[in-house]
Image (tube, rainbow, N blue to C red; front, side):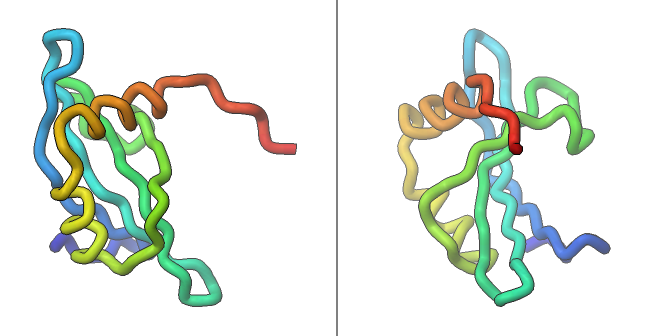
Length: 96
C-alpha cells in the first residue's frame, strides 16, 4: 500500500488494461472525509502520463478503507474495468 500524501489521499496500483490498443494504468484512490467515511475511485492514466491532472477518474460504489478497496478492485474483471474507464471519459454535469 502506498503511503498517504499530504492531502490524505492514498493511491494503490491495481495494474493495467488495454483500451483502443493503448496501455492504461489503473489505480485505486481512497480518501476519508471529516466524518471518517472512506470514498474510493478508480484512476486511469494512459501511457506514460503520471501526473494526477492527467488521470481519468470515476467513483465506485464501495466506501471502504485502502487495502480493502484494492482487493475489491482486483475482483473486477477486464470488461468491468473497461466499462469504468469509459464512464470516466463521459462528460459530467458542472457542480452548482
